[in-house]
Length: 347
Image (cartoon, rainbow, N blue to C red; front, side, top):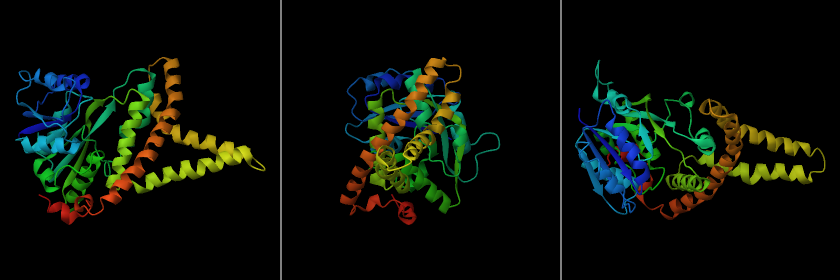
């Protein structure tokens, strides 16, 4: 079956070449590549055109001003294949990535898995230096932490039937961030309603570079949380975060500084909470940093609490803005996206 690979880019001149080079090395090349550029001004389109003669079937769509969802939808609409594989700039594809990712959809020895609608691939941290090592350990899960039954893949490593994309109404164009989570949830809802499968294929992986600065990380997580607020995602998670930072931590700190007795309990609570919050990233760091110099590993471990705090602060700032946007736009029918009947009837 014909496989179309799609991606969206915007000012990605530095990161788009590693992606394209890794496409050249695929053991199962895509039959066509459709990339939508959202109006880059840094030479991204020129860099993509360099691969026109090396990657047959490369199609570049220039659509200034589109958001990520709109760009993906335009690329998928222009794609000819019944199987769509998605990725992003900022990754390097393992040479077996596409072969393994689309196998459940197009079939190999033994044929395709019956009733498969979508395939979830995975991503591994591609890091260098103490800061990126700490970032990768803090924000990227390890494969053994994933529950396949509930995993929602990033669109940097995913494949699905074009018909399934059409059935759920495509990526939500009213949403600028967290759009792939809503798309995943819609796919899962329809697949479950029709007894179809959302397959987990962890050996189809890409190498992903986390953000290189705290400022870039703040911006990324602020946007993610704003998207969560717009899409009404993860209410409980955000409520726990607000309660922790606005109620629990001030209460413990107040007791530690001004309590009438047993002030040590306040300090103990703060220290214990910090250790629990950083425990999982530190465990990941032991694996991710294996073979690194001891000094670099210690520096990365010390950066983990800073990255945790910055990420939480960005989410606390971003989420209410998204919630306010959702309340102001509550009259828009498309933001009520969880109704399966409406999803199935989407054009």
